[in-house]
Length: 277
Length: 351
Ligand SMILES: Nc1ncnc2c1ncn2[C@@H]1O[C@H](COP(=O)(O)OP(=O)(O)O)[C@@H](O)[C@H]1O
Ligand SMILES: [Mg+2]
Image (cartoon, rainbow over all chains, first blue to last red; front, side):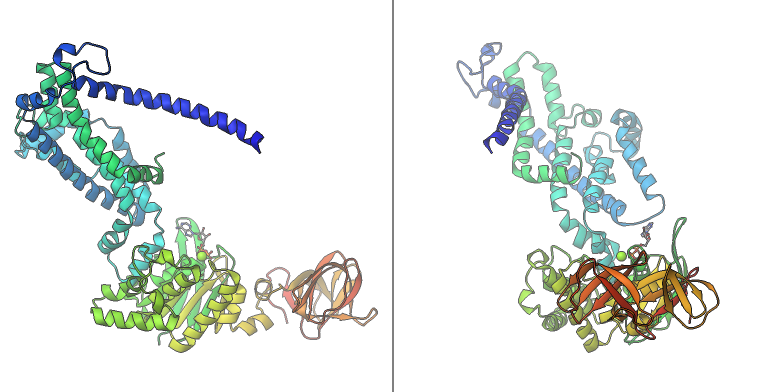
């Protein structure tokens, strides 16, 4: 018995070392970021991980320089609305692709997936023209409105999940007298909670981290723009002051980390069941 | 009560044809079993009756009305699926009441009818459970309950017992039949298990590769199979079907092995005899076939004996518990009037 275990233990040990190294590589910069944000500016080029004279002064200063509460609120609001839009439209589209048979279904789905390969930079200009035509330039709408038009990634994710639900459920409901909308809202959507939770995190993170579009539509209006734009502006003006930069960066990643820890279980479950991994 | 009529039903998926013009009628209140090997098109046919599949050709009528273009919910049918298709996030009561809710029945009415159905099926104690907390047999009952609660014109069953263990299957078979006797609702029951079909149905329709082979009462199919396929499919253990050459009142099966039949023209035929229609007789009996015992399987009720006779496999079934050993030479005699003759080419019944 012990004989059989030995190779496994060595294998396990090796895996732990490798994974531990990976984790260190991931977490190192993060720890450094926290450490730097706690240093006075004078200490910023000390390589020490522990600040000699730790201070919290960088955080209040940040709020003096930038309207942080507004930026945080804008980012949060836009991310929330985008996430809602994505959940609604992608789950609907995914449902149709998974449950309803119609001509050229697979071809259309493949075309949809191909849009994943079109970089955002290519659609940016036509999109800009459209939003300007609609009179929405300089508002937040261009940052969340597209989320209500579905998306290839979310549609794929939700479709994969819906495919794991036995089609007989939809058929039984049809015989029971349910309309397509009813089947979606009372059967498929409640059963898709784990996938919705996972996708919600994806969508929220994506919108929270979004910079490109926000720079196009709200490049300088600190009342309306997002945290990422605020930080980009800040970086240009205070590039020499690393402790301040790091404090600001921490603000941008903290919500994501909190959301992730809260929903970690769903996130991992969602990825493994969608067959993405 | 409602009759169902199926006329020249054709189903094609692209180039692949699954049903080749199937016609049969289900009388009002009749329980008909649709049986055939896996992949022969049973589910497809049932789903066309339910309205879940488009009809390529022919018609389906329910209660005299052609329903080809009628939506499933307007056909007034209920279907029980092989995997039960219970809504996992709804309680037993909600599962059973779902269709009534969709049809706008009020709460009191739904509760009353769900309670009634639960009573019939012995589910009263489980109404608040979720499907995941039930055993296979209980889930099966809930699926039944969901169907009967609506009091539809027609019940459709697609292999509803095949996920149950053997003992439960036998029990549910009897329960479903008893339920039918009580409700009298026209039923179409799909199964690949001919024993289920034989024991439950008023009549059986045998399907093979998208073609209807025979429709009739269980014992008619057993006694007078219309062709070699039905002969081999209905009855367990299966009928011996041996190729031979008819000549002058005999069928020659192999060198030195022949059985008597009515006089026929000289032609290749298939001779059939059920294992239970072979008698064990003393050596030298007129018309007996010499055979060597290859295998004996005893269930206590009967002994199934597999033998080789002139290079052919011949199975016999005895309820008398003869003492037989592997390798022993025995003599088998076909009971008078119990053998069957089929055309070697078409498989159709001769006689
Ligand atoms: N959606 C489909 N597309 C193509 N072929 C199908 C489809 N559904 C069923 N078939 C084919 O139709 C035949 C009959 O299937 P089915 O009715 O499920 O058989 P059974 O229920 O008798 O086992 C099978 O050969 C199957 O491969
Ligand atoms: Mg089937």
